Length: 165
Image (cartoon, one colour):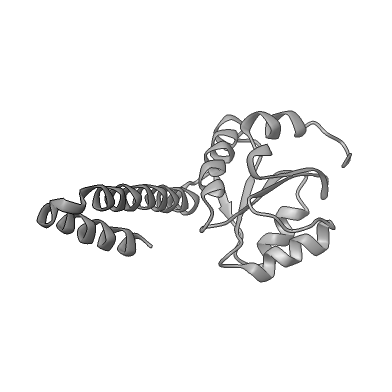
């Protein structure tokens, strides 16, 4: 996608310079390509944060999944590496992790590990969504949310819940 937006940027940029008679269409093409490039660059940066943050535990196999879902206390976060909403929400999850180092945060990349994502939905009895976060207490899911309902504040507030409401 980045190569596509860069290629489009070059294409429309050259047409804009070489053919000023259609400048509005070429200028619009340049703007669209810049917007696409910026959106994709943000998603790539967020995916790097997921893999490089020491406070976030990657879930890549059933053993780690079992550990996460059986925890005394943990946040389990399902992240899509293709979704701009996930790119925004991972910052909230990271902020929670920094503020609450006593709470392990497990991250499952749903595109790369769809089988594990399906297993989470089956075990917790919830419909799949991404991004999606779960508060785990004593091996039970006591709260879950998806998309923009996942905030540092909501994770902090619901870590005191005792049962799924």
